[in-house]
Image 1: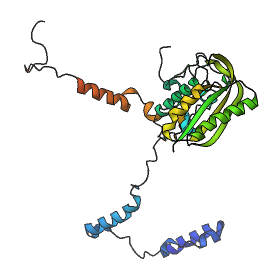
Image 2: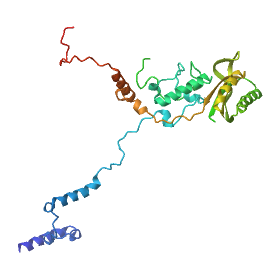
Image 3: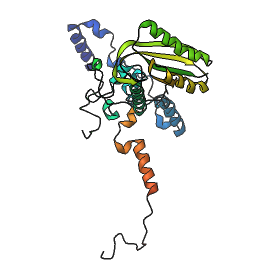
Image 4: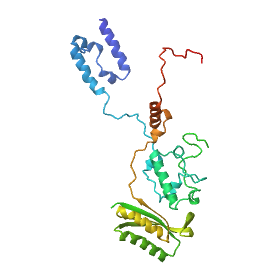
Length: 160
Length: 148
C-alpha cells in the first residue's frame, strides 16, 4: 500500500517536467544485477602477474628511441653553410680580418672551429704571398661587409 | 698525374700581349707532358694591394690568372724555374689541388669551460705523468714534524 503511494508520487513529479526524458530510465526497483566484477585475489599469484606484465608491455619506454632532449650541437658559421675558404675568395677571407690592422682575428672572436680557422689562416697566407690580399690593412671595398661576429664581445676575454 | 694550380700575376700589358704571355706559360706545361684543365681570369689590370717589385720593375697594377693543369710531379720544379725567369710574370705559385678535408665541427666542445675541454684534460694528464715522485718520509704524519 505504502509502496503504491510512493510510486504514484513519483509519476506526478515526472509529468511536471518533460516525461519523454525520463521514460528510457528504468525505475530503481526494476534494475537487475547480472554479474559481479572478477575478484583478482581469488586467483593464483602467477596468473595475476602474467596479466600485469602483459598490460605493462605497451607502457615500457622505447629503448631504440633517440634521446628527445638532446640539444642541437652548435656549429661554426662556415660549417653551417658548408663553405671551404679559398685564396681566390678574398671577400670571404676579409670577413675574418680586422678592419683596423688587417690581421686575422682569433677563434675566440670569430667563433670558428679549430679546423676551419686553420683553413682560413692558410688561405689568407696564400692570398697575401700571391699579391692578392693586403697585409697591413683590410681592402676598402670590403669594409662595409656584414659582420659575422662582434670583436668587442669575444667568447673569452682578451688582453686588448 | 696529379692536378696542380698555377696562380700568377702578369704585369700591366695590352690585351694581345697578355694573350701571348698566357700562351707561353701554357706551352711550358705542354712541353713537359702536361695537360691543361682550365684557365681562370681573376681580373685584368687590377690594382695590387701593395707595390710588387720583380725583375727590376715596380708594379702597382697587374692581371690575375689561375691555371689548373695535370702534369708529372717531377716537372713542377722545372716549371717554377721557368716562370721565375719569365719577365712578364710578376708573382706566381704552384699549389696541388686537394679536396678540402671534411671534418665534423667541434665548436660545441671548444665552447665548454676549460675543465670540460678534451685538449685541456689531455694537457693535465700529461703534466701529471711528468711530475717527479715526491719523497715519502713514511712518518705516518700529515705535517712536517721538525722546525724548519
